[in-house]
Image 1 (spheres, rainbow, N blue to C red):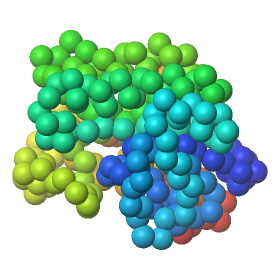
Image 2: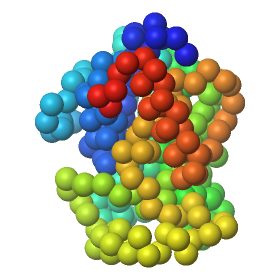
Image 3: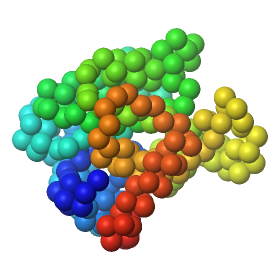
Length: 241
């Protein structure tokens, strides 16, 4: 990848208030190789020191924003929680499936070729678990949109400083992760904990890749992608990140 590509790169981001979205903003605000263009449904409080453009629009207008901005890729970190959705299946699906897919279609119509979607370890459209089933259905149908390159990230338990809704089960899981992670081997290794910052680095690095296709990334693959991203920045002299 040449320096000229990174020097002029704009990456769109939806889901800027979540743990991964805020990590993407923090990473890019610390350097000057990538300009983040955030799109949101409402005004949001940005991290201190954030350097980015933010557009607030109804989701039905997001395609118009993307057409005007013309980013190289879009990172989709949209997602809600069972609690935030009022424990209502329709409200949960409206964000984690409907909004994700409508955003993807708007991006495709705007000419964006690279789409990076944050999903979850264990996502499966045939799962009996509602959360995993919705995530799996979104993955399945994103594959039908027709992007030149689609990267689906499947992190395990996310570690990082949340600014809003840290759930009890999640807190307990993070506290136990140093003991539990080594015990998760084989098919369970994808459920190990991973830093949100690492997932964000992987998302940025993968959004720059040229090879066409659909790619799924577990924790290990994201760790490799994050290392690759850092090495490329170091070679280009942008070590602040």
